[in-house]
Length: 173
Ligand SMILES: Cc1cc2nc3c(=O)[nH]c(=O)nc-3n(C[C@H](O)[C@H](O)[C@H](O)COP(=O)(O)O)c2cc1C
Image (cartoon, rainbow, N blue to C red; front, side, top):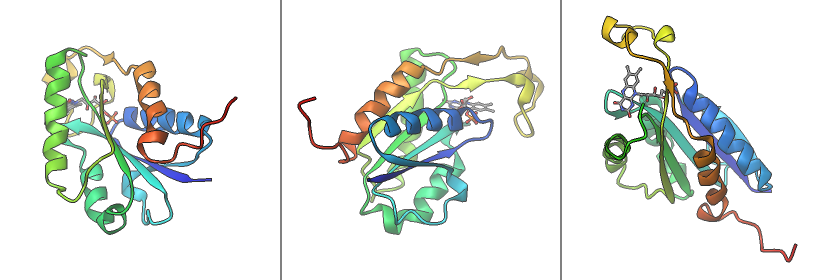
């Protein structure tokens, strides 16, 4: 059974929950899946494919996602990689486009990497849990929101086995 790593870079946990939903969908496709915090992964060489997701903070992809690519470049050059970023508080075209540009800037620094698939998902914002350096009065006054679209997340995950080259042979049912 092909094994896949779903690695996530999170500060407040919403990206981990998305990573877990993606992993569950990949499992339904018959793949053997590990879900791990990107910062805690020492070795990716045993995986047939990697899905890497990270939240966006202050117009940048989470540092644990960026460092993951730096650290594991040697193994990942020969491994199919799909990426996603989480961020927008509103699922308007403008916010999603802005988030995509933020992710593209991070990916442009990794010229060796050609992701097989890229996705942007809306994020979750909870002003009550913010810690330094996010816990400023203006942020604390913003309303909570959670626009994670679980259908869109699972729909994207359903495309990954084929995109990662891990789809099993077609059966007649
Ligand atoms: C201080 C702060 C800065 C943020 N900056 C951005 C940003 O620049 N772009 C964006 O799309 N989302 C931004 N977000 C939204 C987060 O990416 C979103 O809340 C995400 O779901 C958080 O993921 P996490 O719970 O895994 O840490 C920001 C959120 C906070 C709290």
